Image (cartoon, rainbow, N blue to C red; front, top):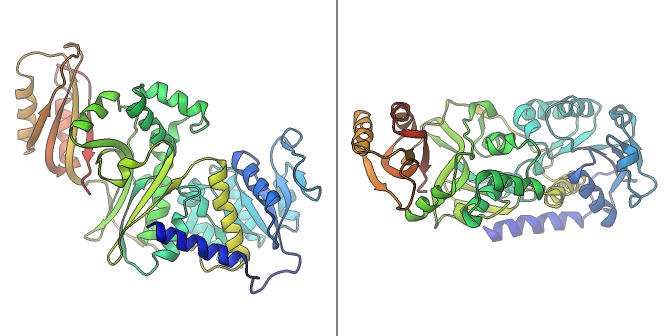
Length: 441
Protein backbone atom coordinates (compact mmCIF):
# COMPACT_ATOMS: atom_id res chain seq x y z
CA UNK A 1 0.00 0.00 0.00
CA UNK A 2 2.92 2.34 0.61
CA UNK A 3 3.57 2.37 -3.11
CA UNK A 4 -0.01 3.37 -3.84
CA UNK A 5 0.09 6.28 -1.42
CA UNK A 6 3.48 7.32 -2.78
CA UNK A 7 2.15 7.24 -6.34
CA UNK A 8 -0.82 9.38 -5.35
CA UNK A 9 1.49 11.85 -3.62
CA UNK A 10 3.82 12.05 -6.60
CA UNK A 11 0.92 12.63 -8.96
CA UNK A 12 -0.23 15.57 -6.81
CA UNK A 13 3.31 16.94 -6.77
CA UNK A 14 3.58 16.65 -10.53
CA UNK A 15 0.29 18.51 -10.96
CA UNK A 16 1.59 21.34 -8.74
CA UNK A 17 4.43 21.96 -11.22
CA UNK A 18 2.15 22.30 -14.23
CA UNK A 19 0.09 25.37 -15.13
CA UNK A 20 -3.67 24.93 -14.84
CA UNK A 21 -5.63 24.45 -18.03
CA UNK A 22 -7.76 27.53 -17.42
CA UNK A 23 -6.92 30.00 -14.69
CA UNK A 24 -7.30 33.69 -13.85
CA UNK A 25 -4.09 35.60 -14.53
CA UNK A 26 -3.90 36.80 -10.94
CA UNK A 27 -4.59 33.38 -9.49
CA UNK A 28 -7.30 32.34 -7.07
CA UNK A 29 -8.03 34.39 -3.96
CA UNK A 30 -8.52 32.33 -0.81
CA UNK A 31 -10.47 33.27 2.33
CA UNK A 32 -9.91 31.23 5.50
CA UNK A 33 -12.94 31.09 7.80
CA UNK A 34 -11.87 30.01 11.28
CA UNK A 35 -8.39 30.72 12.62
CA UNK A 36 -7.97 28.03 15.22
CA UNK A 37 -5.27 25.35 15.22
CA UNK A 38 -5.95 24.15 11.66
CA UNK A 39 -6.67 27.61 10.25
CA UNK A 40 -3.36 28.94 11.54
CA UNK A 41 -1.50 25.95 10.08
CA UNK A 42 -3.15 26.41 6.67
CA UNK A 43 -2.25 30.10 6.69
CA UNK A 44 1.33 29.36 7.70
CA UNK A 45 1.79 26.82 4.89
CA UNK A 46 0.42 29.28 2.33
CA UNK A 47 2.66 32.03 3.71
CA UNK A 48 5.87 30.01 4.03
CA UNK A 49 5.43 28.02 0.81
CA UNK A 50 3.46 30.29 -1.52
CA UNK A 51 1.80 28.66 -4.52
CA UNK A 52 1.94 30.69 -7.75
CA UNK A 53 -1.81 30.42 -8.32
CA UNK A 54 -3.08 30.71 -4.75
CA UNK A 55 -3.30 34.00 -2.84
CA UNK A 56 -4.51 34.19 0.74
CA UNK A 57 -6.44 37.46 0.84
CA UNK A 58 -8.80 37.22 3.81
CA UNK A 59 -9.17 35.69 7.27
CA UNK A 60 -12.54 35.59 8.99
CA UNK A 61 -12.45 34.77 12.69
CA UNK A 62 -13.80 35.77 16.04
CA UNK A 63 -11.73 38.06 18.24
CA UNK A 64 -9.69 39.46 15.36
CA UNK A 65 -7.63 41.75 17.59
CA UNK A 66 -6.48 38.80 19.66
CA UNK A 67 -5.93 36.35 16.81
CA UNK A 68 -4.35 38.62 14.19
CA UNK A 69 -0.74 37.66 13.40
CA UNK A 70 2.14 39.67 12.00
CA UNK A 71 3.62 36.89 9.88
CA UNK A 72 0.90 37.06 7.20
CA UNK A 73 1.32 39.50 4.29
CA UNK A 74 -0.16 42.97 4.74
CA UNK A 75 -2.53 42.34 1.82
CA UNK A 76 -4.51 39.89 3.99
CA UNK A 77 -7.61 41.54 5.41
CA UNK A 78 -9.13 40.43 8.71
CA UNK A 79 -12.82 40.42 9.58
CA UNK A 80 -15.27 38.98 12.07
CA UNK A 81 -18.20 39.08 9.63
CA UNK A 82 -18.82 36.25 7.18
CA UNK A 83 -20.83 38.66 5.02
CA UNK A 84 -17.52 40.38 4.28
CA UNK A 85 -16.24 37.09 2.84
CA UNK A 86 -19.33 36.74 0.64
CA UNK A 87 -18.90 40.31 -0.62
CA UNK A 88 -15.18 39.86 -1.31
CA UNK A 89 -13.47 38.71 -4.50
CA UNK A 90 -12.40 35.43 -2.86
CA UNK A 91 -12.79 32.51 -5.28
CA UNK A 92 -12.32 29.82 -2.63
CA UNK A 93 -13.60 29.70 0.94
CA UNK A 94 -11.76 27.42 3.36
CA UNK A 95 -14.25 26.53 6.12
CA UNK A 96 -12.50 25.52 9.35
CA UNK A 97 -14.95 26.49 12.10
CA UNK A 98 -16.33 22.95 12.48
CA UNK A 99 -19.74 21.78 13.66
CA UNK A 100 -23.03 22.02 11.84
CA UNK A 101 -24.12 25.59 12.56
CA UNK A 102 -23.34 28.18 11.41
CA UNK A 103 -20.96 26.21 9.17
CA UNK A 104 -23.77 24.70 7.07
CA UNK A 105 -25.44 28.06 6.43
CA UNK A 106 -22.13 29.73 5.60
CA UNK A 107 -21.04 26.99 3.21
CA UNK A 108 -24.44 27.07 1.47
CA UNK A 109 -24.14 30.84 1.07
CA UNK A 110 -20.60 30.57 -0.31
CA UNK A 111 -21.61 27.93 -2.87
CA UNK A 112 -24.70 29.88 -3.89
CA UNK A 113 -22.47 32.89 -4.57
CA UNK A 114 -20.31 30.77 -6.87
CA UNK A 115 -17.37 30.37 -4.49
CA UNK A 116 -15.78 26.94 -4.24
CA UNK A 117 -15.39 25.54 -0.72
CA UNK A 118 -12.64 23.46 0.88
CA UNK A 119 -13.54 22.07 4.30
CA UNK A 120 -12.17 19.77 6.99
CA UNK A 121 -15.60 19.54 8.62
CA UNK A 122 -16.55 15.85 8.83
CA UNK A 123 -19.87 16.55 10.55
CA UNK A 124 -20.88 18.93 7.79
CA UNK A 125 -20.05 16.44 5.03
CA UNK A 126 -21.53 13.47 6.89
CA UNK A 127 -24.88 15.16 7.46
CA UNK A 128 -25.17 17.54 4.48
CA UNK A 129 -22.59 16.35 1.97
CA UNK A 130 -24.93 15.24 -0.86
CA UNK A 131 -27.00 18.43 -0.56
CA UNK A 132 -23.95 20.69 -0.59
CA UNK A 133 -22.35 18.77 -3.43
CA UNK A 134 -25.47 19.26 -5.54
CA UNK A 135 -25.52 22.94 -4.64
CA UNK A 136 -21.93 23.28 -5.83
CA UNK A 137 -22.82 21.58 -9.11
CA UNK A 138 -25.79 23.87 -9.68
CA UNK A 139 -23.68 27.00 -9.18
CA UNK A 140 -20.65 25.91 -11.19
CA UNK A 141 -18.24 25.61 -8.28
CA UNK A 142 -16.71 22.79 -6.26
CA UNK A 143 -16.80 21.30 -2.80
CA UNK A 144 -13.68 19.52 -1.53
CA UNK A 145 -13.38 17.68 1.78
CA UNK A 146 -10.20 15.60 1.67
CA UNK A 147 -9.30 16.67 5.22
CA UNK A 148 -12.62 15.53 6.67
CA UNK A 149 -11.47 11.93 7.21
CA UNK A 150 -8.10 10.90 8.69
CA UNK A 151 -6.61 14.40 8.55
CA UNK A 152 -3.38 14.32 6.56
CA UNK A 153 -3.80 10.75 5.34
CA UNK A 154 -4.91 10.84 1.65
CA UNK A 155 -7.76 8.39 2.17
CA UNK A 156 -10.43 10.20 0.17
CA UNK A 157 -8.26 10.93 -2.84
CA UNK A 158 -6.89 7.39 -2.61
CA UNK A 159 -10.37 5.88 -2.69
CA UNK A 160 -11.52 8.11 -5.54
CA UNK A 161 -8.41 7.88 -7.68
CA UNK A 162 -6.13 5.04 -6.65
CA UNK A 163 -8.94 2.53 -6.10
CA UNK A 164 -11.50 3.86 -8.57
CA UNK A 165 -11.12 0.79 -10.77
CA UNK A 166 -11.95 -1.70 -8.02
CA UNK A 167 -15.29 -2.80 -6.57
CA UNK A 168 -14.93 -2.11 -2.87
CA UNK A 169 -17.02 -4.12 -0.42
CA UNK A 170 -15.55 -3.29 2.99
CA UNK A 171 -14.12 -0.29 4.86
CA UNK A 172 -12.61 -0.82 8.28
CA UNK A 173 -10.30 1.27 10.38
CA UNK A 174 -9.32 3.48 13.28
CA UNK A 175 -10.81 6.87 12.50
CA UNK A 176 -10.49 8.72 15.80
CA UNK A 177 -7.01 9.54 17.05
CA UNK A 178 -8.27 10.67 20.46
CA UNK A 179 -9.79 7.28 21.25
CA UNK A 180 -6.73 5.49 19.96
CA UNK A 181 -4.49 7.64 22.15
CA UNK A 182 -6.62 6.93 25.22
CA UNK A 183 -6.71 3.17 24.60
CA UNK A 184 -2.95 3.14 23.91
CA UNK A 185 -2.30 4.89 27.23
CA UNK A 186 -4.52 2.43 29.13
CA UNK A 187 -2.70 -0.45 27.44
CA UNK A 188 0.92 0.69 27.70
CA UNK A 189 0.80 3.16 30.58
CA UNK A 190 -1.36 1.12 32.93
CA UNK A 191 -3.55 4.14 33.68
CA UNK A 192 -7.32 4.40 34.08
CA UNK A 193 -9.66 5.73 31.39
CA UNK A 194 -10.10 9.00 33.31
CA UNK A 195 -6.35 9.57 33.63
CA UNK A 196 -5.77 8.74 29.96
CA UNK A 197 -8.52 11.16 28.95
CA UNK A 198 -6.97 13.97 31.00
CA UNK A 199 -3.62 13.30 29.35
CA UNK A 200 -5.27 13.49 25.92
CA UNK A 201 -6.89 16.82 26.86
CA UNK A 202 -3.62 18.22 28.19
CA UNK A 203 -1.86 17.35 24.91
CA UNK A 204 -4.66 18.85 22.81
CA UNK A 205 -5.91 15.53 21.39
CA UNK A 206 -9.25 15.75 23.22
CA UNK A 207 -11.68 18.63 23.64
CA UNK A 208 -12.85 19.92 27.01
CA UNK A 209 -16.09 18.06 26.23
CA UNK A 210 -14.79 14.77 24.77
CA UNK A 211 -18.22 13.21 24.15
CA UNK A 212 -18.03 13.21 20.34
CA UNK A 213 -14.75 11.32 20.47
CA UNK A 214 -15.18 8.81 23.28
CA UNK A 215 -18.84 8.01 22.48
CA UNK A 216 -17.98 7.30 18.84
CA UNK A 217 -19.91 10.14 17.19
CA UNK A 218 -16.83 11.62 15.51
CA UNK A 219 -15.79 8.27 14.02
CA UNK A 220 -19.27 7.45 12.75
CA UNK A 221 -19.48 10.78 10.88
CA UNK A 222 -16.22 9.88 9.13
CA UNK A 223 -17.44 6.34 8.46
CA UNK A 224 -20.63 7.69 6.86
CA UNK A 225 -18.49 9.73 4.45
CA UNK A 226 -16.34 6.72 3.56
CA UNK A 227 -19.41 4.53 3.04
CA UNK A 228 -20.82 6.99 0.50
CA UNK A 229 -17.52 7.33 -1.32
CA UNK A 230 -16.21 3.77 -1.23
CA UNK A 231 -19.33 1.61 -0.98
CA UNK A 232 -21.68 3.96 -2.87
CA UNK A 233 -24.30 3.54 -0.18
CA UNK A 234 -26.44 6.31 1.27
CA UNK A 235 -26.27 6.28 5.05
CA UNK A 236 -27.12 8.91 7.63
CA UNK A 237 -24.63 8.98 10.53
CA UNK A 238 -27.44 8.38 13.03
CA UNK A 239 -28.14 5.03 11.32
CA UNK A 240 -24.71 3.76 12.38
CA UNK A 241 -24.74 2.42 15.96
CA UNK A 242 -21.78 3.44 18.10
CA UNK A 243 -20.62 2.44 21.55
CA UNK A 244 -18.28 4.30 23.91
CA UNK A 245 -14.77 3.29 24.92
CA UNK A 246 -15.24 4.48 28.52
CA UNK A 247 -16.03 0.97 29.94
CA UNK A 248 -12.59 -0.33 28.85
CA UNK A 249 -10.18 -0.93 31.74
CA UNK A 250 -6.63 -2.18 32.05
CA UNK A 251 -7.87 -5.63 32.99
CA UNK A 252 -9.47 -5.93 29.56
CA UNK A 253 -6.10 -5.44 27.88
CA UNK A 254 -4.61 -8.12 30.13
CA UNK A 255 -7.28 -10.63 29.13
CA UNK A 256 -7.12 -9.54 25.49
CA UNK A 257 -3.39 -10.28 25.51
CA UNK A 258 -4.15 -13.82 26.75
CA UNK A 259 -6.31 -14.18 23.64
CA UNK A 260 -3.59 -12.89 21.31
CA UNK A 261 -5.42 -9.58 20.86
CA UNK A 262 -5.54 -5.93 21.83
CA UNK A 263 -8.46 -3.48 21.96
CA UNK A 264 -9.15 -0.64 19.54
CA UNK A 265 -12.12 1.55 18.62
CA UNK A 266 -12.98 0.05 15.22
CA UNK A 267 -15.19 1.65 12.59
CA UNK A 268 -16.38 -0.92 10.09
CA UNK A 269 -18.83 -1.09 7.19
CA UNK A 270 -19.39 -4.00 4.83
CA UNK A 271 -21.77 -4.85 2.02
CA UNK A 272 -23.27 -8.33 2.48
CA UNK A 273 -26.25 -9.68 0.53
CA UNK A 274 -27.52 -6.24 -0.41
CA UNK A 275 -27.32 -4.90 3.16
CA UNK A 276 -24.88 -2.51 4.79
CA UNK A 277 -23.45 -3.76 8.07
CA UNK A 278 -21.92 -0.82 9.93
CA UNK A 279 -20.82 0.05 13.45
CA UNK A 280 -18.35 2.02 15.54
CA UNK A 281 -17.33 0.24 18.72
CA UNK A 282 -14.40 -0.98 20.81
CA UNK A 283 -13.37 -4.45 19.71
CA UNK A 284 -10.69 -7.08 20.22
CA UNK A 285 -8.36 -7.28 17.22
CA UNK A 286 -5.60 -9.86 16.70
CA UNK A 287 -2.07 -8.66 17.44
CA UNK A 288 -1.21 -9.63 13.84
CA UNK A 289 -3.77 -7.16 12.44
CA UNK A 290 -2.65 -3.76 11.09
CA UNK A 291 -5.28 -2.30 13.45
CA UNK A 292 -3.36 -3.59 16.47
CA UNK A 293 -0.17 -1.82 15.42
CA UNK A 294 -1.76 1.64 15.34
CA UNK A 295 -0.52 3.53 18.39
CA UNK A 296 -1.31 6.88 20.00
CA UNK A 297 -3.16 9.36 17.75
CA UNK A 298 -2.51 7.67 14.40
CA UNK A 299 -5.34 6.73 12.04
CA UNK A 300 -5.67 3.74 9.74
CA UNK A 301 -8.17 2.81 7.03
CA UNK A 302 -8.34 -0.57 5.28
CA UNK A 303 -10.32 -0.86 2.04
CA UNK A 304 -11.15 -4.31 0.68
CA UNK A 305 -11.85 -4.70 -3.02
CA UNK A 306 -12.98 -7.52 -5.29
CA UNK A 307 -9.87 -7.30 -7.44
CA UNK A 308 -7.22 -5.39 -5.50
CA UNK A 309 -7.71 -7.11 -2.17
CA UNK A 310 -6.84 -5.15 0.96
CA UNK A 311 -5.30 -1.66 0.75
CA UNK A 312 -4.13 0.15 3.88
CA UNK A 313 -3.85 3.91 4.43
CA UNK A 314 -2.26 5.10 7.66
CA UNK A 315 -0.69 8.17 9.21
CA UNK A 316 -1.37 11.15 11.44
CA UNK A 317 -5.07 11.87 11.40
CA UNK A 318 -5.24 14.56 14.06
CA UNK A 319 -3.51 17.84 14.73
CA UNK A 320 -3.23 21.17 13.00
CA UNK A 321 -0.34 20.46 10.63
CA UNK A 322 -1.47 17.08 9.19
CA UNK A 323 -5.02 18.37 8.65
CA UNK A 324 -3.68 21.59 7.11
CA UNK A 325 -1.62 19.56 4.64
CA UNK A 326 -4.81 17.87 3.44
CA UNK A 327 -6.57 21.25 3.15
CA UNK A 328 -3.74 22.79 1.12
CA UNK A 329 -3.58 19.66 -1.06
CA UNK A 330 -7.26 20.19 -1.85
CA UNK A 331 -6.56 23.82 -2.72
CA UNK A 332 -3.79 22.81 -5.11
CA UNK A 333 -5.96 20.11 -6.66
CA UNK A 334 -8.75 22.63 -7.09
CA UNK A 335 -6.70 25.26 -8.91
CA UNK A 336 -5.24 22.62 -11.21
CA UNK A 337 -8.61 21.17 -12.11
CA UNK A 338 -7.77 17.70 -10.81
CA UNK A 339 -10.36 15.09 -11.61
CA UNK A 340 -11.15 14.49 -7.96
CA UNK A 341 -11.43 18.23 -7.23
CA UNK A 342 -15.05 18.53 -6.27
CA UNK A 343 -15.18 15.11 -4.68
CA UNK A 344 -18.59 14.02 -5.78
CA UNK A 345 -20.45 11.79 -3.42
CA UNK A 346 -21.92 10.27 -6.56
CA UNK A 347 -25.33 8.68 -6.58
CA UNK A 348 -25.24 6.43 -3.53
CA UNK A 349 -27.79 3.65 -3.31
CA UNK A 350 -30.17 3.30 -0.38
CA UNK A 351 -29.71 -0.07 1.31
CA UNK A 352 -30.92 -1.60 4.58
CA UNK A 353 -28.51 -0.74 7.41
CA UNK A 354 -27.80 -3.05 10.32
CA UNK A 355 -25.11 -3.50 12.96
CA UNK A 356 -25.85 -7.17 13.57
CA UNK A 357 -22.41 -8.58 12.79
CA UNK A 358 -21.66 -12.20 13.55
CA UNK A 359 -18.39 -12.72 15.41
CA UNK A 360 -16.86 -14.35 18.42
CA UNK A 361 -17.48 -12.35 21.60
CA UNK A 362 -15.56 -11.29 24.68
CA UNK A 363 -17.64 -10.92 27.86
CA UNK A 364 -16.03 -9.41 30.94
CA UNK A 365 -18.15 -9.93 34.06
CA UNK A 366 -17.34 -8.29 37.40
CA UNK A 367 -18.93 -10.16 40.29
CA UNK A 368 -19.13 -10.78 44.00
CA UNK A 369 -17.89 -14.36 44.03
CA UNK A 370 -19.95 -17.26 45.32
CA UNK A 371 -20.57 -20.89 44.23
CA UNK A 372 -22.72 -21.60 41.19
CA UNK A 373 -22.08 -18.40 39.22
CA UNK A 374 -20.65 -20.10 36.14
CA UNK A 375 -23.58 -22.51 36.06
CA UNK A 376 -26.09 -19.62 36.11
CA UNK A 377 -24.28 -17.79 33.31
CA UNK A 378 -23.98 -20.97 31.24
CA UNK A 379 -27.70 -21.63 31.67
CA UNK A 380 -28.63 -18.20 30.27
CA UNK A 381 -26.26 -18.59 27.34
CA UNK A 382 -27.54 -22.08 26.62
CA UNK A 383 -31.11 -20.77 26.64
CA UNK A 384 -30.13 -18.43 23.80
CA UNK A 385 -28.24 -21.21 22.00
CA UNK A 386 -24.86 -19.55 22.56
CA UNK A 387 -21.79 -21.76 22.95
CA UNK A 388 -19.03 -20.91 25.42
CA UNK A 389 -15.54 -21.07 23.94
CA UNK A 390 -13.42 -20.44 27.06
CA UNK A 391 -13.41 -19.04 30.60
CA UNK A 392 -10.44 -16.96 31.83
CA UNK A 393 -9.79 -15.80 35.38
CA UNK A 394 -6.62 -14.12 36.65
CA UNK A 395 -5.75 -14.62 40.32
CA UNK A 396 -5.22 -11.89 42.88
CA UNK A 397 -8.41 -9.85 42.62
CA UNK A 398 -10.75 -8.93 45.47
CA UNK A 399 -13.46 -11.59 45.53
CA UNK A 400 -16.06 -8.89 46.22
CA UNK A 401 -15.10 -7.23 42.92
CA UNK A 402 -13.79 -10.10 40.81
CA UNK A 403 -13.40 -9.72 37.02
CA UNK A 404 -13.36 -12.76 34.79
CA UNK A 405 -13.91 -13.36 31.08
CA UNK A 406 -16.09 -15.68 29.04
CA UNK A 407 -15.43 -15.96 25.31
CA UNK A 408 -18.19 -17.14 23.00
CA UNK A 409 -18.27 -18.99 19.71
CA UNK A 410 -19.36 -16.98 16.69
CA UNK A 411 -22.91 -15.68 16.87
CA UNK A 412 -24.91 -12.57 16.00
CA UNK A 413 -24.48 -9.56 18.26
CA UNK A 414 -28.25 -9.22 18.67
CA UNK A 415 -28.42 -12.70 20.20
CA UNK A 416 -25.63 -11.90 22.66
CA UNK A 417 -27.28 -8.61 23.65
CA UNK A 418 -30.54 -10.42 24.47
CA UNK A 419 -28.60 -12.83 26.68
CA UNK A 420 -26.77 -9.90 28.32
CA UNK A 421 -30.04 -8.33 29.37
CA UNK A 422 -30.83 -11.47 31.38
CA UNK A 423 -27.33 -11.91 32.76
CA UNK A 424 -27.20 -8.28 33.93
CA UNK A 425 -30.20 -8.92 36.19
CA UNK A 426 -28.36 -11.62 38.16
CA UNK A 427 -27.63 -10.57 41.74
CA UNK A 428 -23.91 -11.39 41.80
CA UNK A 429 -22.95 -8.76 39.19
CA UNK A 430 -21.44 -5.54 40.58
CA UNK A 431 -21.44 -3.74 37.22
CA UNK A 432 -22.92 -4.36 33.74
CA UNK A 433 -21.25 -6.99 31.60
CA UNK A 434 -18.85 -5.69 28.94
CA UNK A 435 -19.54 -7.26 25.53
CA UNK A 436 -16.91 -6.77 22.82
CA UNK A 437 -16.72 -8.44 19.41
CA UNK A 438 -13.55 -10.35 18.59
CA UNK A 439 -12.68 -9.38 15.03
CA UNK A 440 -10.73 -12.01 13.16
CA UNK A 441 -10.38 -10.48 9.68
